[in-house]
Length: 279
Length: 245
Image 1 (cartoon, helix red, strand yellow):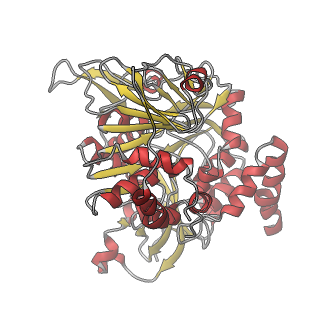
Image 2 (cartoon, rainbow over the protein chains, first blue to last red; image 1 turned 45 degrees about the horizontal axis):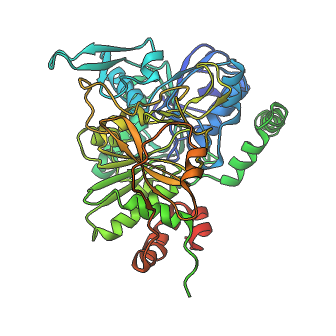
């Protein structure tokens, strides 16, 4: 077996230090590393710069971002949107912005993608049409408007490349060599290309080599992009492995997190309590 | 006996009217009425219109991650999209970020999503807001997530064509950069629209009452469209069509 495999989620979470920039993907499929996020919270990590690729606005991805923010792990967020999807607003995020306890770098989805892909290609910046005349562009000191050198007179925005310290995501499986199969969840691939450290939880580790199967290998992140993997069945819950969120659990969180007290009680029962039980 | 026509069916029918001849319409997150309108247009197109509904891997065709929608739209491959806003102003600027003096927020919303790109490159952007009040339709937005129009030297093949609310339908006049009343929904009045709109808009000498769907359209909406909508927005389909997934 590849030495990328670590025994447990706490071994992965130990790689996340206070002050790091941490990228999470948008969670349209079962790529939400919820168990890892819970351990980061238990570790009392502080001053994270959270970057969402490009949003955390599906029910479970939004919940992860909201939990990290509510737990005080996050100093700043770069995002094109944070919500609990059909379960409504992300209450701890909205409160933190209103109270000024986090700063937000508001972006737009294709700008975050373009900057991350520039980062993955080791380029200094990426151009993007749109943006000009928006307050998103006006408020960002890492977005500039230049004259299109190939069409003088046309203003075009350029975006500083993003290279997160850490990307974290869940995936269906890894092979024995540490290649990670993501299927259609290509955002995980782009996050891995751009990030210095890539932490992955997988539903299962398979005793095979994905490169033996051309159909599988089309959906693979090669092992050389990966820093560490832990096997974590149900590690994305309340996102089920089939990509459907357990909305009852998300709604219970949404309801509890409306108040600081409700959030604290929910975290005690669902995050810190789990640790106590395991000790 | 036919069930009474619901407002959502009128709105969806009006939306479909803007999508003639389109090849590919994308629908953003949490947009069940726009999705219903787009799927009605699809049924009428004899299958030539593709509708991609975001947020559900089964209703999107992407194989290159979330960036593919934007790359395709930039290449001219998306003919229509729908945007809303916590605030929309008379120049077609939309605000998805919050109320107050940014970055401080009295109310914070989720964020701008893809608006600051798609609004520029998708030719037919239909704005929607189902709360037509002076709180939502304002003279000037507090934060411009995406502007309604751009200077002539800015690359901008796209932009707003219409704004539909629970009271009326506006067209967007690109030359004058303002809204013009197109039709008022049945049961509502010009006075009600004026009282509840925070921005000035053009009132033409003649404007219509928004058309209610005819029998054939209703049959399509309540048949194949309802079935498809139920697969994506089960709660909405149950409420509007009584349709189960």
